Image (cartoon, rainbow, N blue to C red; front, side):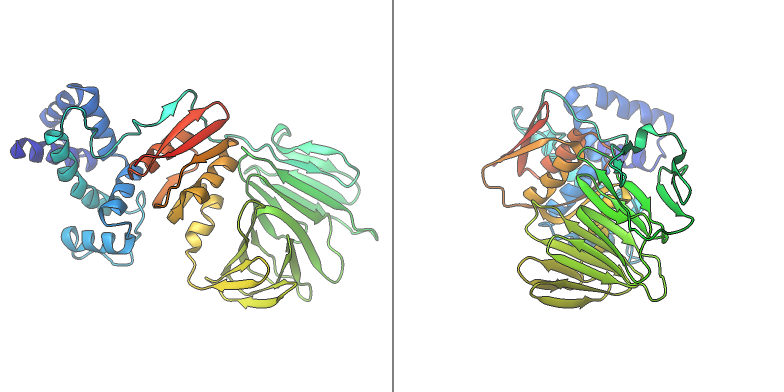
Amino acid sequence: MQAFINRISELIIKHLEDRLTGDEKSELEIWRNESAENQALFDSLTNPAQVAIQLEKYYAYNAEKGWDLLMQQHQPNQDQNSSKTFGINWKGWIAAASILLIAGLSYWATRPSSTPAIVSHGADTTMQQDVKAPSLTKATITLSDGKMIVVDTASEGVLVKDENLNIIRTNDGSVKYDVAATTGTIQYNTLNNPRGSRVINLILSDGTRVWLNSESSLRYPVAFSSDKREVEITGEAYFEVAKVAGKKFFVKAGNSTTEVLGTHFNINSYSDEANIKITLLEGAIQVSSAKGQNKLAPGQQAQVDNEIHVIDNVNTDDVVAWKNEMFSFNGADIHTIMRQVSRWYDVEVIIKGAIEEKFVGELPRNVNVSSLLKMLETTGAVKFKIEPGKIEVMNRK
């Protein structure tokens, strides 16, 4: 039996490395076609998302320890600074996946017939109707006169044109403000990006770029005043602020104000989160609230509730994953994950019972919701029921 397990493991690894011979392809195909169970196991063992989750579970959710150990065992000369997430270092991931092939196939071969395979392919998910990821933005712009523009129904080119202002939709889908001259009165527009909508990118009149997540809004002047620049957000936004001599940039979010000269930072101010999180990636900012103020250095995060708490060495890749069209979890709890799911897929989420596990994984945000849920299920901690407009989360233990 062990020889058979080793042979199937060898074939799957060769499949991942794209070096199967014609006869070996046929041999693997025969095994896959013997049963739906074999095919499900093959799919799980060749899916980077599911294998990555299993590796974290295998090494007690310790990503650093797990990856370092795998590299010592399989790639002793591997650069220790290489990525620890799947989907980036393909050769490293194949080596890591091989750890699970023997364990998974051994369990598959010796389990009782009623026992599921060690790497689940989401068999516990009850699904009446899958939910697709947003393919379009549903964003709208409300002009100062109350007129509303639906961004995605407008063709590329000029959305608004008057004597002093052009609002342009660029070929990459961004919305750009070009101001020829300023008037005495400051006029405000509001960009609203609802639940179930793709991220929208806005280029303000000073050249500042803003990425707006789903269920978020940004209120901003068409043209900034002579002495300062100020905008206001709800939800989540990522800023790359253009440097303008003598004109500071301010972002209001809830009870916080972020002051910046020119920098890259992320603000998460969703009302259903425990606090406002302001994370600095580049430059310097000062965060203020009624209780005081703090300056941040790159890699720090200010968490604002009644007071400001500064957290060091934040994983900024996780913070801005949404901007890069990824889900990224590094020790996140199920409530944090499902709030993101709710906003992105525009579904109601109901969590039944206590689920204490932390989750680690990364997945593109363009997948159907079932793909993400199946990835989470491989931990053995949760199961899901998908109904139209609703997802139920249950403890599988």
